[in-house]
Amino acid sequence: MEVYAAYSKNENLLMKSSSGALFGVIAKLFLKNGDLVFGAAFDDNFNLKHIGISDEQELYKLLGSKYVQSKLGETYRTIRKLLHNDNKRILFVGTPCQVAGLKSFLGREHDNLFTIDIICHGVPSRKMFKQYLAWQKKKLKEDITEFDFRCKTKSGWGMFGKMQLSSKKEININSIYDPYIGNFLQCNTYRESCYSCKYASKDRVGDLTLGDYWGILKEHPEFYSSKGVSCVLVNTDKGNLIWEKCKPYLNYVESSIEKVSKHNVNLIHPSIRPERRDNIYKELNSKSFQDAMFVKVGMKTKFKSAIPYQMKQAAQKLFCLIKLGSRK
Image 1 (cartoon, rainbow, N blue to C red):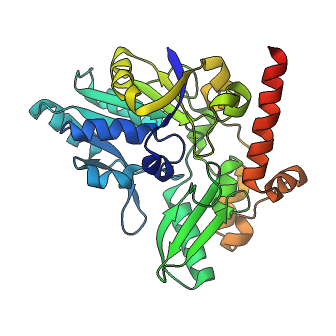
Image 2 (tube, rainbow, N blue to C red; image 1 turned 60 degrees about the horizontal axis):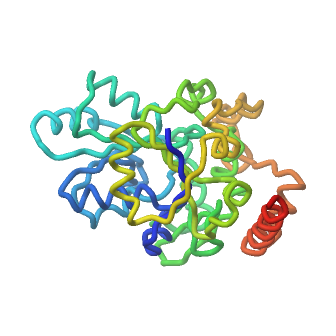
Protein backbone atom coordinates (compact mmCIF):
# COMPACT_ATOMS: atom_id res chain seq x y z
CA MET A 1 0.00 0.00 0.00
CA GLU A 2 1.25 3.45 -0.94
CA VAL A 3 -0.06 6.45 0.99
CA TYR A 4 -0.01 10.13 0.04
CA ALA A 5 -1.22 13.55 1.08
CA ALA A 6 -2.50 15.41 -1.98
CA TYR A 7 -4.65 18.21 -3.32
CA SER A 8 -5.70 19.39 -6.76
CA LYS A 9 -3.81 22.05 -8.70
CA ASN A 10 -7.21 23.20 -10.04
CA GLU A 11 -8.31 25.80 -7.48
CA ASN A 12 -11.87 25.99 -8.79
CA LEU A 13 -12.31 22.23 -8.36
CA LEU A 14 -10.58 22.39 -4.98
CA MET A 15 -13.05 24.99 -3.66
CA LYS A 16 -16.03 22.91 -4.80
CA SER A 17 -14.75 19.80 -3.01
CA SER A 18 -14.74 18.96 0.69
CA SER A 19 -11.02 18.30 1.09
CA GLY A 20 -8.31 17.99 -1.59
CA ALA A 21 -10.56 17.33 -4.62
CA LEU A 22 -8.96 13.96 -5.39
CA PHE A 23 -12.25 12.40 -6.42
CA GLY A 24 -12.96 15.34 -8.74
CA VAL A 25 -9.56 15.00 -10.43
CA ILE A 26 -10.01 11.24 -10.93
CA ALA A 27 -13.61 11.53 -12.12
CA LYS A 28 -12.69 14.21 -14.69
CA LEU A 29 -10.08 11.87 -16.19
CA PHE A 30 -12.66 9.10 -16.57
CA LEU A 31 -15.28 11.42 -18.05
CA LYS A 32 -12.86 13.04 -20.51
CA ASN A 33 -12.05 9.56 -21.75
CA GLY A 34 -15.73 8.87 -22.44
CA ASP A 35 -16.14 6.57 -19.43
CA LEU A 36 -18.78 6.46 -16.68
CA VAL A 37 -18.72 7.59 -13.04
CA PHE A 38 -21.15 6.47 -10.32
CA GLY A 39 -21.51 8.34 -7.03
CA ALA A 40 -23.99 9.87 -4.58
CA ALA A 41 -26.05 12.91 -5.61
CA PHE A 42 -29.03 14.80 -4.22
CA ASP A 43 -32.14 15.10 -6.35
CA ASP A 44 -34.36 18.20 -6.28
CA ASN A 45 -36.04 16.98 -3.08
CA PHE A 46 -32.75 16.24 -1.25
CA ASN A 47 -33.09 12.50 -1.63
CA LEU A 48 -29.56 11.12 -1.79
CA LYS A 49 -29.16 8.48 -4.49
CA HIS A 50 -26.34 6.88 -6.41
CA ILE A 51 -26.41 7.96 -10.04
CA GLY A 52 -24.23 7.40 -13.08
CA ILE A 53 -22.88 10.28 -15.16
CA SER A 54 -21.05 10.45 -18.49
CA ASP A 55 -20.89 14.24 -18.90
CA GLU A 56 -18.34 16.39 -17.08
CA GLN A 57 -21.02 19.10 -16.76
CA GLU A 58 -22.81 16.84 -14.25
CA LEU A 59 -19.76 16.20 -12.07
CA TYR A 60 -20.77 18.91 -9.59
CA LYS A 61 -23.62 16.65 -8.45
CA LEU A 62 -21.16 14.08 -7.10
CA LEU A 63 -18.72 16.47 -5.41
CA GLY A 64 -18.64 17.17 -1.68
CA SER A 65 -19.33 15.20 1.48
CA LYS A 66 -22.91 14.14 2.14
CA TYR A 67 -23.57 12.94 5.69
CA VAL A 68 -26.57 10.74 5.02
CA GLN A 69 -27.10 7.23 3.67
CA SER A 70 -27.41 7.11 -0.12
CA LYS A 71 -29.99 4.94 -1.83
CA LEU A 72 -28.44 2.50 -4.30
CA GLY A 73 -31.65 1.45 -6.05
CA GLU A 74 -30.80 -0.27 -9.33
CA THR A 75 -27.15 0.91 -9.35
CA TYR A 76 -25.57 -2.54 -9.00
CA ARG A 77 -27.75 -4.03 -11.73
CA THR A 78 -27.06 -1.08 -14.03
CA ILE A 79 -23.31 -1.47 -13.54
CA ARG A 80 -23.45 -5.23 -14.16
CA LYS A 81 -25.32 -4.66 -17.41
CA LEU A 82 -22.86 -1.99 -18.54
CA LEU A 83 -19.86 -4.17 -17.70
CA HIS A 84 -21.28 -6.99 -19.82
CA ASN A 85 -22.46 -4.91 -22.77
CA ASP A 86 -20.05 -1.99 -22.99
CA ASN A 87 -16.31 -1.55 -23.31
CA LYS A 88 -16.30 1.67 -21.29
CA ARG A 89 -14.53 1.84 -17.96
CA ILE A 90 -16.66 2.45 -14.88
CA LEU A 91 -15.61 4.31 -11.72
CA PHE A 92 -17.71 3.65 -8.61
CA VAL A 93 -17.26 5.65 -5.41
CA GLY A 94 -19.05 4.92 -2.15
CA THR A 95 -18.70 3.86 1.45
CA PRO A 96 -16.65 0.68 1.99
CA CYS A 97 -19.78 -1.40 2.57
CA GLN A 98 -21.25 -0.14 -0.71
CA VAL A 99 -18.07 -1.02 -2.59
CA ALA A 100 -18.00 -4.46 -0.95
CA GLY A 101 -21.69 -4.91 -1.78
CA LEU A 102 -21.06 -4.13 -5.44
CA LYS A 103 -18.18 -6.61 -5.65
CA SER A 104 -20.25 -9.31 -3.94
CA PHE A 105 -23.18 -8.66 -6.27
CA LEU A 106 -20.97 -8.93 -9.37
CA GLY A 107 -19.34 -12.12 -8.12
CA ARG A 108 -16.00 -11.61 -9.83
CA GLU A 109 -13.44 -8.96 -10.75
CA HIS A 110 -13.88 -6.89 -13.91
CA ASP A 111 -10.90 -5.27 -15.59
CA ASN A 112 -12.95 -2.20 -16.56
CA LEU A 113 -14.41 -1.57 -13.08
CA PHE A 114 -12.50 0.77 -10.76
CA THR A 115 -13.59 1.46 -7.19
CA ILE A 116 -12.95 4.14 -4.57
CA ASP A 117 -13.98 3.69 -0.96
CA ILE A 118 -14.14 6.67 1.37
CA ILE A 119 -12.99 6.72 4.99
CA CYS A 120 -16.41 6.51 6.61
CA HIS A 121 -17.42 7.30 10.20
CA GLY A 122 -20.97 6.00 9.76
CA VAL A 123 -24.23 7.20 8.22
CA PRO A 124 -27.46 8.55 9.74
CA SER A 125 -30.82 7.62 8.26
CA ARG A 126 -32.36 9.44 5.33
CA LYS A 127 -35.49 10.01 7.43
CA MET A 128 -33.52 11.93 10.06
CA PHE A 129 -32.05 14.23 7.40
CA LYS A 130 -35.52 14.88 6.02
CA GLN A 131 -36.74 15.80 9.52
CA TYR A 132 -33.80 18.16 9.88
CA LEU A 133 -34.58 19.93 6.59
CA ALA A 134 -38.25 20.26 7.60
CA TRP A 135 -37.16 21.81 10.92
CA GLN A 136 -34.88 24.27 9.13
CA LYS A 137 -37.61 25.21 6.67
CA LYS A 138 -40.09 25.86 9.49
CA LYS A 139 -37.53 27.93 11.43
CA LEU A 140 -36.39 29.96 8.43
CA LYS A 141 -39.85 30.25 6.85
CA GLU A 142 -38.34 29.57 3.43
CA ASP A 143 -37.61 26.64 1.18
CA ILE A 144 -34.03 25.34 1.07
CA THR A 145 -32.75 25.12 -2.49
CA GLU A 146 -29.12 24.09 -1.89
CA PHE A 147 -27.36 22.37 1.00
CA ASP A 148 -23.60 21.99 1.39
CA PHE A 149 -22.32 19.99 4.38
CA ARG A 150 -18.78 21.29 3.87
CA CYS A 151 -18.34 24.76 2.37
CA LYS A 152 -14.96 26.50 2.08
CA THR A 153 -16.05 30.00 1.05
CA LYS A 154 -16.38 31.33 4.61
CA SER A 155 -13.52 29.72 6.51
CA GLY A 156 -11.66 27.40 4.18
CA TRP A 157 -11.19 23.68 4.78
CA GLY A 158 -12.96 22.52 7.90
CA MET A 159 -16.42 21.76 9.24
CA PHE A 160 -18.59 24.68 8.17
CA GLY A 161 -21.73 24.16 6.11
CA LYS A 162 -24.00 26.39 4.06
CA MET A 163 -27.62 26.52 2.92
CA GLN A 164 -29.12 28.58 0.14
CA LEU A 165 -32.76 29.60 0.45
CA SER A 166 -35.41 30.26 -2.19
CA SER A 167 -34.78 34.01 -1.74
CA LYS A 168 -31.11 33.36 -2.71
CA LYS A 169 -30.09 34.22 0.85
CA GLU A 170 -27.20 32.10 2.13
CA ILE A 171 -27.06 30.74 5.68
CA ASN A 172 -23.72 29.64 7.11
CA ILE A 173 -23.74 26.65 9.45
CA ASN A 174 -21.35 26.25 12.38
CA SER A 175 -21.35 22.48 12.28
CA ILE A 176 -20.46 21.73 15.90
CA TYR A 177 -23.65 23.48 17.10
CA ASP A 178 -25.90 22.28 14.28
CA PRO A 179 -28.37 19.61 15.51
CA TYR A 180 -27.85 17.32 12.54
CA ILE A 181 -24.16 17.77 11.67
CA GLY A 182 -23.12 18.28 15.30
CA ASN A 183 -24.65 14.97 16.35
CA PHE A 184 -23.09 13.33 13.30
CA LEU A 185 -19.66 14.57 14.38
CA GLN A 186 -20.27 13.19 17.88
CA CYS A 187 -21.20 9.76 16.42
CA ASN A 188 -24.69 9.94 17.97
CA THR A 189 -26.81 9.16 14.92
CA TYR A 190 -25.28 6.36 12.87
CA ARG A 191 -26.97 3.14 11.84
CA GLU A 192 -26.47 0.41 14.43
CA SER A 193 -24.37 -1.64 12.00
CA CYS A 194 -21.90 1.25 11.63
CA TYR A 195 -20.67 0.79 15.22
CA SER A 196 -19.50 -2.74 14.40
CA CYS A 197 -18.38 -2.08 10.81
CA LYS A 198 -15.91 -4.73 9.64
CA TYR A 199 -14.59 -2.37 6.94
CA ALA A 200 -13.27 0.18 9.46
CA SER A 201 -9.70 -1.05 9.18
CA LYS A 202 -6.49 -0.63 7.19
CA ASP A 203 -7.54 -3.51 4.94
CA ARG A 204 -9.53 -1.67 2.28
CA VAL A 205 -12.01 -2.95 -0.30
CA GLY A 206 -11.56 -0.22 -2.93
CA ASP A 207 -8.76 0.19 -5.45
CA LEU A 208 -8.21 3.58 -3.84
CA THR A 209 -9.24 4.98 -0.47
CA LEU A 210 -9.87 8.72 -0.09
CA GLY A 211 -10.51 10.93 2.93
CA ASP A 212 -9.61 14.18 4.64
CA TYR A 213 -6.01 14.29 5.78
CA TRP A 214 -6.87 15.40 9.29
CA GLY A 215 -3.62 15.94 11.16
CA ILE A 216 -1.74 17.21 8.11
CA LEU A 217 -0.37 20.09 10.21
CA LYS A 218 1.22 17.62 12.61
CA GLU A 219 2.45 15.09 10.07
CA HIS A 220 3.38 17.30 7.09
CA PRO A 221 3.09 20.95 8.21
CA GLU A 222 5.01 22.22 5.19
CA PHE A 223 2.34 20.69 2.91
CA TYR A 224 -0.71 22.19 4.63
CA SER A 225 -3.26 24.03 2.48
CA SER A 226 -6.15 26.03 3.94
CA LYS A 227 -8.22 24.92 0.93
CA GLY A 228 -8.01 21.24 1.81
CA VAL A 229 -5.76 18.19 1.73
CA SER A 230 -6.80 14.61 1.05
CA CYS A 231 -5.20 11.37 2.10
CA VAL A 232 -4.90 8.77 -0.64
CA LEU A 233 -4.39 5.05 -0.05
CA VAL A 234 -3.33 3.16 -3.17
CA ASN A 235 -4.57 -0.36 -2.47
CA THR A 236 -4.33 -2.31 -5.73
CA ASP A 237 -2.62 -2.37 -9.13
CA LYS A 238 -5.74 -0.77 -10.63
CA GLY A 239 -5.56 1.88 -7.93
CA ASN A 240 -1.95 2.55 -8.87
CA LEU A 241 -2.95 2.91 -12.52
CA ILE A 242 -5.44 5.63 -11.56
CA TRP A 243 -2.94 7.31 -9.25
CA GLU A 244 -0.20 7.50 -11.89
CA LYS A 245 -2.58 9.09 -14.39
CA CYS A 246 -3.82 11.78 -11.97
CA LYS A 247 -0.43 12.74 -10.46
CA PRO A 248 0.28 15.50 -13.05
CA TYR A 249 -2.87 17.30 -11.85
CA LEU A 250 -1.94 17.16 -8.15
CA ASN A 251 0.34 18.55 -5.52
CA TYR A 252 1.33 15.56 -3.41
CA VAL A 253 3.79 14.23 -0.85
CA GLU A 254 4.41 10.66 0.28
CA SER A 255 3.04 9.76 3.71
CA SER A 256 2.28 6.53 5.59
CA ILE A 257 -0.70 4.58 6.84
CA GLU A 258 0.58 5.05 10.41
CA LYS A 259 0.49 8.84 10.07
CA VAL A 260 -2.91 8.94 8.39
CA SER A 261 -4.60 6.50 10.77
CA LYS A 262 -3.52 8.49 13.85
CA HIS A 263 -6.02 11.15 12.78
CA ASN A 264 -8.55 8.92 11.00
CA VAL A 265 -9.47 6.34 13.63
CA ASN A 266 -11.93 4.64 11.27
CA LEU A 267 -8.88 3.16 9.56
CA ILE A 268 -8.29 1.30 12.83
CA HIS A 269 -11.71 0.60 14.34
CA PRO A 270 -15.41 1.51 13.93
CA SER A 271 -16.84 4.62 15.53
CA ILE A 272 -17.50 4.11 19.25
CA ARG A 273 -21.19 3.91 20.06
CA PRO A 274 -22.02 6.70 22.56
CA GLU A 275 -24.68 6.36 25.26
CA ARG A 276 -26.72 9.10 23.58
CA ARG A 277 -27.37 6.74 20.66
CA ASP A 278 -29.70 4.72 22.93
CA ASN A 279 -32.36 7.42 22.98
CA ILE A 280 -31.84 9.90 20.17
CA TYR A 281 -33.97 8.07 17.59
CA LYS A 282 -36.69 7.33 20.16
CA GLU A 283 -36.81 10.99 21.20
CA LEU A 284 -37.33 12.05 17.59
CA ASN A 285 -40.76 10.41 17.80
CA SER A 286 -41.72 11.95 21.16
CA LYS A 287 -40.03 15.39 21.23
CA SER A 288 -39.53 18.32 18.92
CA PHE A 289 -36.60 17.96 16.53
CA GLN A 290 -34.64 20.68 18.31
CA ASP A 291 -35.11 19.09 21.74
CA ALA A 292 -34.35 15.56 20.56
CA MET A 293 -31.26 16.65 18.63
CA PHE A 294 -29.85 19.16 21.11
CA VAL A 295 -26.06 19.19 20.71
CA LYS A 296 -24.00 19.02 23.88
CA VAL A 297 -20.76 20.95 23.34
CA GLY A 298 -17.95 20.98 25.91
CA MET A 299 -16.25 24.18 27.09
CA LYS A 300 -12.96 23.29 25.36
CA THR A 301 -14.75 22.89 22.03
CA LYS A 302 -16.69 26.13 22.58
CA PHE A 303 -13.47 28.00 23.29
CA LYS A 304 -11.78 26.61 20.17
CA SER A 305 -14.77 27.44 17.98
CA ALA A 306 -14.72 31.06 19.19
CA ILE A 307 -11.26 31.59 17.68
CA PRO A 308 -11.42 32.68 14.01
CA TYR A 309 -10.65 29.62 11.87
CA GLN A 310 -7.91 31.23 9.79
CA MET A 311 -6.15 32.55 12.91
CA LYS A 312 -6.32 29.14 14.56
CA GLN A 313 -4.93 27.34 11.51
CA ALA A 314 -2.14 29.91 11.01
CA ALA A 315 -1.07 29.62 14.66
CA GLN A 316 -1.16 25.83 14.55
CA LYS A 317 0.87 25.74 11.33
CA LEU A 318 3.49 28.08 12.80
CA PHE A 319 3.73 25.96 15.95
CA CYS A 320 4.13 22.74 13.92
CA LEU A 321 6.79 24.28 11.67
CA ILE A 322 8.75 25.51 14.70
CA LYS A 323 8.48 22.05 16.25
CA LEU A 324 9.58 20.44 12.97
CA GLY A 325 12.56 22.80 12.76
CA SER A 326 13.65 21.97 16.30
CA ARG A 327 13.91 18.27 15.38
CA LYS A 328 16.40 18.95 12.58
